[in-house]
Image 1 (spheres, rainbow, N blue to C red):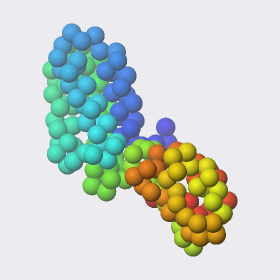
Image 2: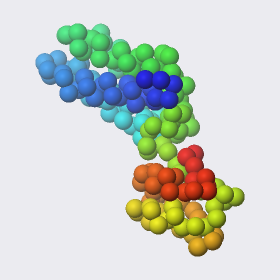
Image 3: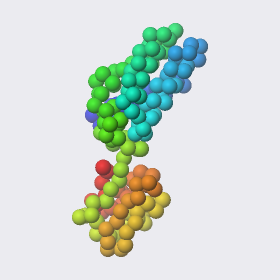
Image 4: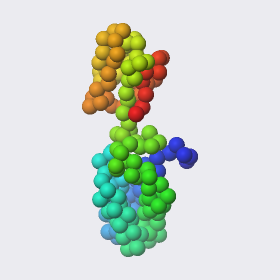
Length: 165
């Protein structure tokens, strides 16, 4: 890990593991970790709220304090640690609907800069879902609703017109 990793998705990665490894004997670990994971998923998709952040912290403490084994008692640590040390990333996901590291795919937005677009159509020809419109030698535009954020447009543009916002 380095400064380019998304701490919210890192916490989710560790909870994915915990949810899979839980024996299911106690409810805090079996159900609590699943709910924590769902909240992190919601936040990574840009659908989280400030209330979700409060619930996430509260439920993390409940799972930690009431689980029967070491797995359940330590499973919320990545959530609590990242919230304590990288709360700005959580706030960026919830308030700004942006992932500072650009790793949460749902929060990415590919945009074509009009000044650099020469209308070569390379981006439009390589878009697998036809999300890019524009005439040859004219400025192209990406339909954000249709875009699947695959990055093909960014990869094929030779004029640095496509960027991630």
